[in-house]
Length: 270
Image (cartoon, rainbow, N blue to C red):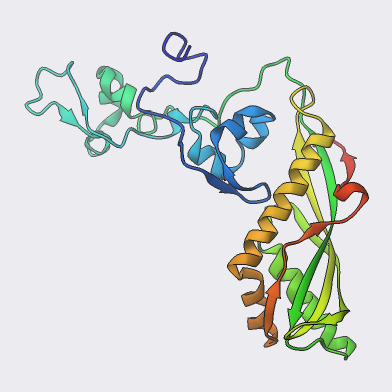
Protein backbone atom coordinates (compact mmCIF):
# COMPACT_ATOMS: atom_id res chain seq x y z
CA UNK A 1 0.00 0.00 0.00
CA UNK A 2 2.69 2.52 0.99
CA UNK A 3 4.70 1.69 -2.12
CA UNK A 4 1.77 2.29 -4.49
CA UNK A 5 -0.06 5.09 -2.61
CA UNK A 6 2.64 7.19 -0.93
CA UNK A 7 0.60 10.40 -0.76
CA UNK A 8 -2.45 8.66 0.66
CA UNK A 9 -0.26 6.92 3.24
CA UNK A 10 1.53 10.19 4.14
CA UNK A 11 4.80 8.54 3.01
CA UNK A 12 6.23 10.64 0.19
CA UNK A 13 9.79 10.32 1.51
CA UNK A 14 11.20 6.75 1.46
CA UNK A 15 13.96 7.71 3.94
CA UNK A 16 11.38 8.80 6.53
CA UNK A 17 10.13 5.95 8.73
CA UNK A 18 8.38 5.54 12.06
CA UNK A 19 10.57 4.53 14.97
CA UNK A 20 10.40 0.89 16.08
CA UNK A 21 11.68 1.83 19.55
CA UNK A 22 9.23 2.10 22.45
CA UNK A 23 8.80 5.56 23.96
CA UNK A 24 7.12 7.19 26.96
CA UNK A 25 4.23 9.63 26.59
CA UNK A 26 3.62 11.73 29.73
CA UNK A 27 0.07 11.16 30.92
CA UNK A 28 -0.29 7.94 28.89
CA UNK A 29 2.59 5.86 30.20
CA UNK A 30 5.71 4.11 28.90
CA UNK A 31 6.27 1.40 26.26
CA UNK A 32 4.30 3.10 23.48
CA UNK A 33 4.76 2.30 19.80
CA UNK A 34 3.49 4.06 16.71
CA UNK A 35 0.78 1.39 16.46
CA UNK A 36 -0.67 2.93 19.63
CA UNK A 37 -0.74 6.35 17.94
CA UNK A 38 -2.40 4.94 14.82
CA UNK A 39 -4.90 2.72 16.65
CA UNK A 40 -7.41 5.43 17.54
CA UNK A 41 -7.79 9.17 18.14
CA UNK A 42 -4.74 9.63 15.91
CA UNK A 43 -5.17 13.36 15.24
CA UNK A 44 -5.14 14.08 18.96
CA UNK A 45 -2.27 11.71 19.75
CA UNK A 46 -0.22 13.25 16.95
CA UNK A 47 -0.32 16.57 18.82
CA UNK A 48 1.78 14.96 21.57
CA UNK A 49 5.46 15.83 21.12
CA UNK A 50 6.67 12.25 21.70
CA UNK A 51 4.30 10.92 19.03
CA UNK A 52 5.30 13.59 16.50
CA UNK A 53 8.99 12.91 17.10
CA UNK A 54 8.82 9.11 16.89
CA UNK A 55 6.01 8.61 14.36
CA UNK A 56 6.50 11.03 11.45
CA UNK A 57 4.83 8.72 8.92
CA UNK A 58 1.78 8.02 11.08
CA UNK A 59 1.46 11.71 11.95
CA UNK A 60 2.20 13.05 8.47
CA UNK A 61 5.30 14.89 9.65
CA UNK A 62 7.96 13.69 7.22
CA UNK A 63 7.90 17.04 5.44
CA UNK A 64 8.95 18.70 8.72
CA UNK A 65 12.36 17.03 8.81
CA UNK A 66 15.32 16.41 6.51
CA UNK A 67 17.03 13.21 5.47
CA UNK A 68 20.09 13.07 7.73
CA UNK A 69 22.01 10.81 5.32
CA UNK A 70 23.88 11.67 2.14
CA UNK A 71 21.89 11.37 -1.09
CA UNK A 72 22.89 11.21 -4.77
CA UNK A 73 22.03 14.15 -7.05
CA UNK A 74 21.92 12.61 -10.52
CA UNK A 75 20.27 15.65 -12.14
CA UNK A 76 23.22 17.99 -11.50
CA UNK A 77 25.71 17.26 -14.30
CA UNK A 78 27.85 20.20 -13.18
CA UNK A 79 28.60 18.67 -9.76
CA UNK A 80 31.87 16.80 -9.34
CA UNK A 81 30.80 15.20 -6.06
CA UNK A 82 27.15 14.26 -6.47
CA UNK A 83 26.74 12.88 -2.92
CA UNK A 84 25.39 15.65 -0.72
CA UNK A 85 23.60 16.32 2.57
CA UNK A 86 20.89 18.90 3.28
CA UNK A 87 23.50 21.03 5.04
CA UNK A 88 25.05 21.61 1.59
CA UNK A 89 21.74 23.11 0.43
CA UNK A 90 21.44 25.27 3.55
CA UNK A 91 24.91 26.74 2.95
CA UNK A 92 24.03 27.88 -0.57
CA UNK A 93 23.30 31.60 -1.10
CA UNK A 94 19.95 30.66 -2.64
CA UNK A 95 18.67 27.33 -1.26
CA UNK A 96 15.30 27.90 -2.97
CA UNK A 97 16.92 27.54 -6.37
CA UNK A 98 18.32 24.12 -5.45
CA UNK A 99 14.94 23.05 -4.07
CA UNK A 100 13.16 24.08 -7.24
CA UNK A 101 15.68 22.84 -9.80
CA UNK A 102 17.08 19.67 -8.23
CA UNK A 103 14.35 17.07 -7.57
CA UNK A 104 16.70 15.06 -5.34
CA UNK A 105 17.05 18.06 -3.02
CA UNK A 106 13.29 18.55 -2.81
CA UNK A 107 12.83 14.84 -2.09
CA UNK A 108 15.41 14.73 0.72
CA UNK A 109 15.28 18.19 2.29
CA UNK A 110 11.59 19.13 2.69
CA UNK A 111 12.26 21.09 5.90
CA UNK A 112 14.99 23.16 4.26
CA UNK A 113 12.77 23.62 1.21
CA UNK A 114 9.91 25.05 3.28
CA UNK A 115 7.54 22.11 2.87
CA UNK A 116 6.78 21.79 6.61
CA UNK A 117 3.20 22.27 7.74
CA UNK A 118 1.34 21.78 11.02
CA UNK A 119 0.43 18.17 10.21
CA UNK A 120 -2.32 16.27 8.39
CA UNK A 121 -5.35 18.36 7.48
CA UNK A 122 -8.56 16.90 8.95
CA UNK A 123 -11.22 15.86 6.51
CA UNK A 124 -14.03 18.43 6.12
CA UNK A 125 -16.47 15.72 7.19
CA UNK A 126 -14.48 14.73 10.27
CA UNK A 127 -16.26 15.24 13.56
CA UNK A 128 -14.73 17.90 15.83
CA UNK A 129 -12.88 16.76 18.93
CA UNK A 130 -14.81 16.67 22.19
CA UNK A 131 -13.03 17.96 25.29
CA UNK A 132 -13.57 16.12 28.56
CA UNK A 133 -12.44 16.85 32.08
CA UNK A 134 -11.40 13.63 33.83
CA UNK A 135 -11.08 13.47 37.62
CA UNK A 136 -9.06 10.51 38.90
CA UNK A 137 -9.05 9.80 42.67
CA UNK A 138 -5.56 8.49 43.50
CA UNK A 139 -4.16 6.78 46.61
CA UNK A 140 -0.50 6.20 47.50
CA UNK A 141 1.05 4.54 50.54
CA UNK A 142 4.08 6.52 51.67
CA UNK A 143 6.65 5.99 54.44
CA UNK A 144 7.87 9.21 56.04
CA UNK A 145 10.56 10.00 58.57
CA UNK A 146 7.93 11.99 60.44
CA UNK A 147 4.36 13.13 59.87
CA UNK A 148 3.99 16.68 61.15
CA UNK A 149 1.32 17.16 63.80
CA UNK A 150 1.36 20.93 63.49
CA UNK A 151 -1.32 21.92 60.90
CA UNK A 152 0.91 24.54 59.30
CA UNK A 153 3.84 22.12 58.90
CA UNK A 154 1.49 19.42 57.59
CA UNK A 155 0.12 21.86 55.01
CA UNK A 156 3.68 22.66 53.87
CA UNK A 157 4.33 18.94 53.35
CA UNK A 158 1.04 18.44 51.49
CA UNK A 159 1.80 21.42 49.23
CA UNK A 160 5.27 19.97 48.52
CA UNK A 161 3.73 16.66 47.45
CA UNK A 162 1.16 18.50 45.31
CA UNK A 163 3.86 20.43 43.44
CA UNK A 164 6.10 17.37 43.01
CA UNK A 165 3.26 15.23 41.64
CA UNK A 166 2.02 17.99 39.34
CA UNK A 167 5.53 18.35 37.86
CA UNK A 168 5.35 14.75 36.56
CA UNK A 169 1.99 15.15 34.80
CA UNK A 170 1.27 16.45 31.28
CA UNK A 171 -0.08 19.95 30.56
CA UNK A 172 -3.72 20.71 31.44
CA UNK A 173 -3.46 18.63 34.62
CA UNK A 174 -4.17 19.64 38.20
CA UNK A 175 -3.60 17.97 41.57
CA UNK A 176 -6.48 18.72 43.93
CA UNK A 177 -7.40 18.07 47.56
CA UNK A 178 -4.18 16.30 48.53
CA UNK A 179 -4.26 14.98 52.10
CA UNK A 180 -1.78 12.99 54.18
CA UNK A 181 -3.46 10.67 56.67
CA UNK A 182 -1.44 8.67 59.21
CA UNK A 183 -1.83 4.90 58.86
CA UNK A 184 -2.30 2.43 61.71
CA UNK A 185 0.56 0.35 60.36
CA UNK A 186 4.22 1.14 60.94
CA UNK A 187 7.21 -0.17 59.04
CA UNK A 188 10.77 1.16 59.41
CA UNK A 189 9.36 4.66 59.18
CA UNK A 190 5.89 6.06 59.77
CA UNK A 191 3.37 4.95 57.17
CA UNK A 192 0.79 7.34 55.79
CA UNK A 193 -1.93 7.32 53.15
CA UNK A 194 -1.60 9.96 50.42
CA UNK A 195 -4.97 10.78 48.86
CA UNK A 196 -5.60 13.28 46.07
CA UNK A 197 -7.44 13.89 42.81
CA UNK A 198 -5.74 14.27 39.44
CA UNK A 199 -7.84 16.35 37.08
CA UNK A 200 -6.95 16.32 33.39
CA UNK A 201 -8.44 18.03 30.36
CA UNK A 202 -8.21 15.68 27.37
CA UNK A 203 -9.91 15.44 24.00
CA UNK A 204 -11.11 12.63 21.79
CA UNK A 205 -12.78 12.34 18.40
CA UNK A 206 -16.22 10.67 18.39
CA UNK A 207 -16.30 7.90 15.82
CA UNK A 208 -12.67 7.05 16.52
CA UNK A 209 -13.08 6.34 20.21
CA UNK A 210 -15.56 6.84 23.07
CA UNK A 211 -15.54 9.00 26.18
CA UNK A 212 -15.18 5.86 28.29
CA UNK A 213 -12.15 4.66 26.31
CA UNK A 214 -10.53 8.11 26.46
CA UNK A 215 -11.14 8.22 30.21
CA UNK A 216 -9.66 4.75 30.68
CA UNK A 217 -6.57 5.84 28.69
CA UNK A 218 -6.22 8.86 30.97
CA UNK A 219 -6.53 6.73 34.13
CA UNK A 220 -4.02 4.12 32.98
CA UNK A 221 -1.61 6.74 31.63
CA UNK A 222 -1.75 8.80 34.82
CA UNK A 223 -1.13 5.81 37.08
CA UNK A 224 1.77 4.65 34.89
CA UNK A 225 3.30 8.13 34.88
CA UNK A 226 3.01 8.47 38.67
CA UNK A 227 4.37 4.95 39.24
CA UNK A 228 7.37 5.71 37.01
CA UNK A 229 8.02 9.02 38.80
CA UNK A 230 7.79 7.22 42.15
CA UNK A 231 10.11 4.40 41.15
CA UNK A 232 12.64 6.89 39.76
CA UNK A 233 12.52 8.83 43.02
CA UNK A 234 11.51 12.07 41.28
CA UNK A 235 8.62 12.84 43.62
CA UNK A 236 10.50 11.81 46.76
CA UNK A 237 13.59 13.89 45.93
CA UNK A 238 11.52 16.99 45.19
CA UNK A 239 9.63 16.73 48.49
CA UNK A 240 12.78 15.99 50.49
CA UNK A 241 14.57 18.97 48.95
CA UNK A 242 11.76 21.38 49.82
CA UNK A 243 10.86 20.05 53.31
CA UNK A 244 13.89 18.14 54.62
CA UNK A 245 11.65 15.19 55.56
CA UNK A 246 13.07 11.80 54.52
CA UNK A 247 10.78 9.59 52.41
CA UNK A 248 11.63 5.89 52.42
CA UNK A 249 9.09 4.51 49.94
CA UNK A 250 6.25 5.69 47.73
CA UNK A 251 4.16 2.71 46.64
CA UNK A 252 2.59 2.51 43.19
CA UNK A 253 -0.62 4.53 43.03
CA UNK A 254 -4.11 3.08 42.71
CA UNK A 255 -7.19 4.76 41.29
CA UNK A 256 -10.23 5.12 43.50
CA UNK A 257 -13.83 5.60 42.44
CA UNK A 258 -16.21 2.98 41.05
CA UNK A 259 -14.20 0.11 39.59
CA UNK A 260 -11.08 2.27 39.71
CA UNK A 261 -12.34 4.53 36.94
CA UNK A 262 -12.12 8.28 36.66
CA UNK A 263 -15.15 10.54 36.66
CA UNK A 264 -15.59 12.58 33.49
CA UNK A 265 -17.26 15.87 32.65
CA UNK A 266 -17.93 16.91 29.04
CA UNK A 267 -16.64 20.43 28.40
CA UNK A 268 -17.64 22.81 25.60
CA UNK A 269 -15.50 22.39 22.50
CA UNK A 270 -13.17 25.41 22.20
